[in-house]
Image 1 (cartoon, chains in turn purple, red):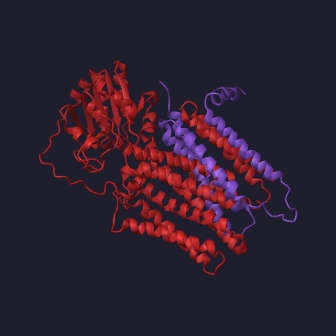
Image 2 (image 1 turned 60 degrees about the vertical axis):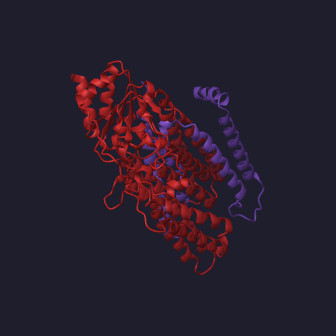
Image 3 (image 1 turned 90 degrees about the vertical axis):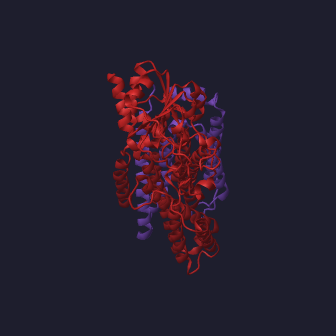
Length: 140
Length: 465
């Protein structure tokens, strides 16, 4: 719990942008939950209708958050930053898992499996090399 | 219920990713960011895997094991090869997006074209174009960085290059529009494959005219594209976590490219379409300029008498793997009470932050790595500026000579130091093909040879002398 206290002191009070960020996250949370609990037509048992506008909103907000956070990243760490964001964007792995594991025709699942392999490579090598580089940055 | 768990996990993941990047603002907290990133990734994988529609597990397990088997060796490359590895991982990211887009397209086409709504079709076309052009573009960039023999290092240009490149992209986008309007037409899958082919070709043609000195910018731009292709994938799959993570990656690439462009005083369009370094600046210099050479012994004496030494590393240091010898020299100078700082230009090396990582590998404390803007005001007090394999980033003609391609680029003011020692591999001009007048100034002394050997000799001389 100590780190939560440290976070509170350090971020909530000194770094306003992060507070904004938390607000945004909670906003998205509430949106998603509202969508989840909203009464849906029981006859339409298919996946919930696609909500383009909230997707666009998430995209725009995430881009702004990304800009704000990345701008403050230490210039010393630009190389590890790139390998870290690379590993993070390999979250595409969730899409590949869904395509590979679902009950689809084999050709489609093969494409998914190759994509899954590519994303998994990025996750493993991205996080490992980022940590390897960060370990080297030492103080006097 | 399980849908709710998945959505909740995705929200937690999004927040963890943001914090993970936030902690990169300081080397002290940065490793915590990696731990949180890994945690978020595991959470996402597990919650996706336990969804009820996932019924085939064998292929998932095989692909994951294969990914781990390839990923671990890729994470152990020497740090000088980090730019290549990064380009390669952009290629993998692009490929994953492109393949999932293709899979989804054919899946929905098979289920009936009413599945291919306009929105989905736009997202798929964007995903496929971005994904596949990032794939071949990054592969070629990785090949150039690895200096594979059959890939040309120098920019390749041909007539109407930009017209052809833009034309290809316009055709691909036009075909995409056709598909959006007529998703169910009998020719639609052919058109779709044509879009893929055009994107793959465009990726190659897009990178071929770009030279090594522009790689920091190009890698950043490809990083941005890889992120955007993940965003498009999120739109296709209706997955907000993908959109969030992709947007974080995309904005990171964008900010890095802006920083790189600013550090070279060039615009995006100039980097992408300018074919920098292709023109050998064949400026006929009137008189034969003469280098003044210094011996190792003499240079060691000069260094010993200094109070402030600023070392300016460049790509030559990376090529020669000289960072560990530099550490020995650093230790020798520190032992004598001399202040030693490293001046790091944002575009030194082949990717953003390249020099910092190499120097950190050699155990140089990061407080001594100083950015260009902060060190320049100290340069007049600097007794010796030691240039190790840097060239264009210390060329004073960038300040006033409008005829050089690097005019206007911010430089490290090595020439304002009381004395300059420059280590250079050969007497040939640098990457941009420009003479560097720093080397001919009255207070500049040259040390010719491999950076690793010369710095090592200097350190040895100081240790014994």
